[in-house]
Length: 287
Ligand code: G1P
Image (cartoon, protein in one colour):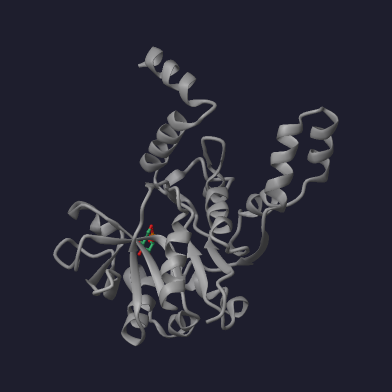
């Protein structure tokens, strides 16, 4: 088994749900408390030992590249002004990861976005992370997946339990628990109705795949919404080789919609070591 080093961040989506905020800036750059959403995902991947990052971007996404790039002018100005904490943070972010950028030129679906990185992945296992699912946990979500991948050598998908009313927003899995306690996924359906949903276990945006996934992505036909669905390729993979699910530990926010985004900012703002207490007091005054 080759070591797991690579991770794909699909980041080409238009961010329609956040318009007009996302008209001129990528939704991945929206701020949760004190840093952009995408930085949380990248830091989580790095903490799980996945240091080779590929962003699948599109038009209007250049701010992501600038964020992870060195800005010599800004660094020099901060240094000169004696703002050493800010200088350190800005230069840390610019140097934290090796990032490659690829453009998804047409919006053909999440599966297609992942397939854009086919050549870069080669014959190695790889992660996929959807940054608008924000997961804050003691053990990084990607590390929770990595441990099962290292134990089994197989693909691993992060799961959460959802209400019946929520199943139509997610890929929903069918599974059985093996004697070892691992959840083996037997099938999955993209955004089913309540009646079609095989369980209440939803695919959240964290995945580790064996390289075989790319071959299957080339074969899947457009599915839900006329798009190349990642979920359909994973279902095909699960018919060929074991695919495991991990019920993720931690606080999870669907920051890809305005309500979840506000909730993430509120909860994490109130928990913030520097701003939390004063925010709590200010809120009491305002409400
Ligand atoms: C994607 C996946 C879906 C998964 C979801 C998690 O859907 O296709 O299976 O449950 O992410 O956020 P999207 O939210 O991109 O429509």
